[in-house]
Image (cartoon, rainbow, N blue to C red):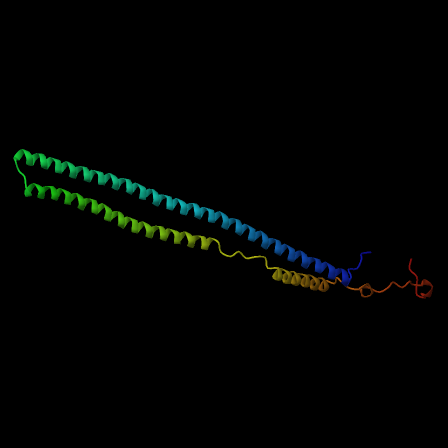
Length: 205
């Protein structure tokens, strides 16, 4: 004979179901938070490496421009010095001296100064653009990190408990509707023995 599921047993089973449901919900939320945290950490490292490479490329370009400008200055100075030396020799061979030679020397010197100033001015423009580029790169990287590291949703303990309680109540209600949880007195009547001697009707073999 099967045992009858009492209301107490049904209530305990429903409570256990609710607690298990809440525990599974909290565990799932924790795992999701850990996964998101790991993904954010990896993405942050990648963004930092990308930003470092971008800064390195800018600094390398700056050094290359500095070397090229220094070489260009040397060439300008060398050509101006050679031009003045040649002019002096030519003037001496031609017997020319005085203000005309001085004016020629000054023109070479002025051309040299103009060329050197042009390089310096271009360096200043490049430095300003580079500073703006660095600031923009830093702001973009900071924005990317803020976008990556958004607040991670933490486990909602209260919500999980309430959902678990709702699950337990639903389980209890379903059990009652299915006929579980009935008391032993209501589950059936006690068997009454029958006295065959009281039967006066026909007998059948």
